[in-house]
Each structure stands twice: as C-alpha cells, then as structure tokens.
Image (cartoon, rainbow, N blue to C red; front, top):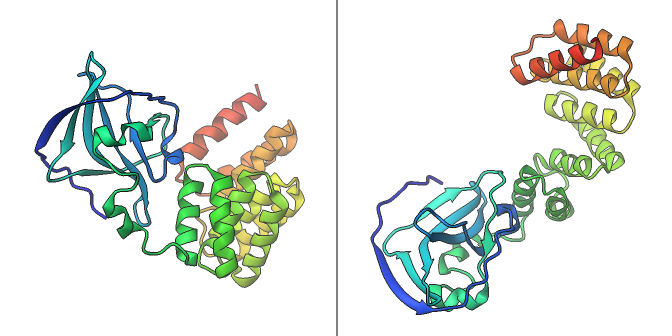
Length: 279
C-alpha cells in the first residue's frame, strides 16, 4: 500500500469532556486502538487509530487533532475529506490509549467502519504468519508466538514459518524448541543459507558451540550463498568473547578477517571486541 500525504480540510467543534490520557503505551501495544500523541507545540494532541495492514504492518490512520480548553471542553479538528496513513516504525515514542469516555466528544466509534476491509482474512495460516512476523519485528515475541503457533497448526510447512517460530523461541530463550524446528527445516532444505544462519545462532545460544562450528564448516564448503558467512563467524567469535577465552577469540577473529564482509556493523563490533580482549 502506498501512503500519500494529502492536503485536508478541517472542521472544528467544541464539546465538553473529561480527559484522562496516560502516555505510557508503545505503538505495538495499541493494535485496534484509538490513540493520542503527546502535546504538540500549539497545545493540541494528534489522534488516530492504530491497526495492522497485512502488507504494510503496524499503521496509524490519523484522524485529526484536538485541544483541551480551559473549561475542560474539547476543540476538535478532524480530517474532513481525506486522511493520512503512516507506517509505524519501532521506536521509543509513547502514546495514550484514548478512553471510551472521549469517543462521543471526538465523534468516533470503537472500531472505524473502514477497519472491516483489513479483517477479511482472520483465520488462514497467512494471516497468523503475517501477524506473528509483525510482532516479532517489534520484539514482542511472546505475542508473536501465539499467532505463529496457530499458523503452524493450520499449515506447518507455510513458507518462512519455521524461521519466524525459531526467532520467537530464541527470543524467549527456548533454544531447544528453536533447534528442533531449524534442524528439521535444514533436513528439508539443506541449501537455505538463512535457515543455516539461524541454526548456527541457535546452537551457540544453546551452549552447543562445537555443533555450531561443525555446521559452520559444513556451510562454508557446501552453500553457494555466502552472504552470512561473516555473520556466522562473528557469532562464534562472540561466544568466545563472552567466555573470555582469549586464545580462541583471536583464532576466530583472524578467521573473520579472511571472510569477505560488507557489513560495517560487524567489522566495527569485531574491532571493538578485539581491542577489549587484547588490551
């Protein structure tokens, strides 16, 4: 979906209301909720409805602004003929869920009429996968897992599901579950470099460094896709950094230097760890 900023005509109204706004919620905690943002420079509050677009992810449908007058009435400016949709990114912005007591004053219903167009598919494996993928992206892994496990019951072979499930399990430190899923996935598709990367990461997290190294060496020899070789090597090196094993850290740091790598982040972190270990 494309989001285009449109010029809009606003109308104003005044109405009495009691406000009770607590700006303590992350975007990802507000699916299918009306929210208000912290006060703007002109003392107004931007408000809108947060929902999930299966293609765009977590999205804000902006409705307008409102101000709280001295007599505790609201002056509301709503978008009259157009609206603004904004794809929400993971950040530290906090919003307030608008209480039901303000719905009448803001002329809103609990759920906008247009929301039904985003709820046409709520029972398929794709739906549950998309929602789980979105929540994993916001690091809400426990909630993501509730959707992904439903997708698994419907279609355990749904494309990408095994990796998303393993991501959730790793995030929740359920490494054994992640290891089983990824091992089975590699048996089905041994040439998938991304699954291989996640499997090596999982083995390291599950304190199976020897198995991780064995899988790394195997992947170096057999996989044509080499884009994750440096990351895999870095993760093994990081294991020895955590264990304060200087000798093995230096061995894998030297190995990392021999692997083509375009990631500035990996290079920078590797240099910082090397300086710390060998200071």
